[in-house]
Amino acid sequence: MNLLRITLLLVAVYSFLNRFLYTWLPTNYIFDPKVLNTICNSVIAKHNDLSTQESTKDFFVDLRNELANTYGEQYINKYVDEEWVFNNAGGAMGHMIILHASITEYLIIFGSAVGTEGHTGVHFADDYFTILVGEQTAALPYALKPEVYKPGMTHHLQKGYAKQYSMPSGSFALELAQGYIPAMLPFGFLDTFSSTLDIYTLYRTVYLTGRDMLKNLFINRKL
Image (cartoon, rainbow, N blue to C red; front, side, top):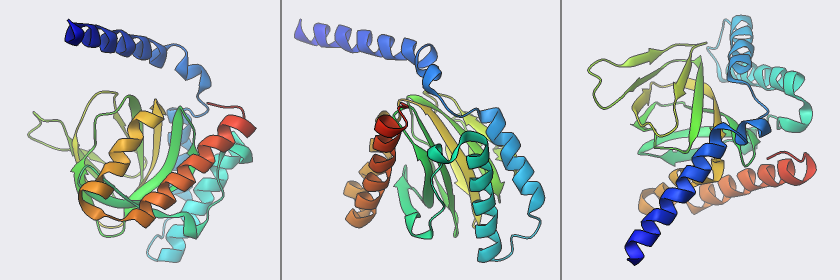
């Protein structure tokens, strides 16, 4: 009987949250995936040479500035070299810089200088992954051929779906997640305890994410 009650409670909670995901939650969103794709493509068109670290950094700074011009400086973090952090999740390792983090959205630049491959995770959110440089390949469990995403293309991973993905060396993307962001955080943290034991990176990730979530919640008044 207790198991049945717990099951019914979990089903009720999931139904409630799932309904809000498509009704109330979007009223709190700042970003539009289509607008982000347009911004990315306009910045990509300006940067033909990404052969050096400095030229790639200039590209990312330009992208950050265009995002701030569109959405407001208060919502887009400054580009700071020291705020890049490693990210280990789903067996994949890369690095990221957080441009925006709130309860309902995050916007990051994610990629890998050396290449990576792993599991996307299964999330209570939609994920939009716009390739900036390099490429991403992805596949559903039944796929016999990969999906291939090139610069300027957006890969939409729908809520509840999982894929295998890979990115060759030097590939980076602008990633937008919209949904219940706190529910995604364990996926990004658990590899610390199961494999890497990189407590410093965990601390930096928690600090940078928490700092931005609190700023957007209490200063910008945005979920």
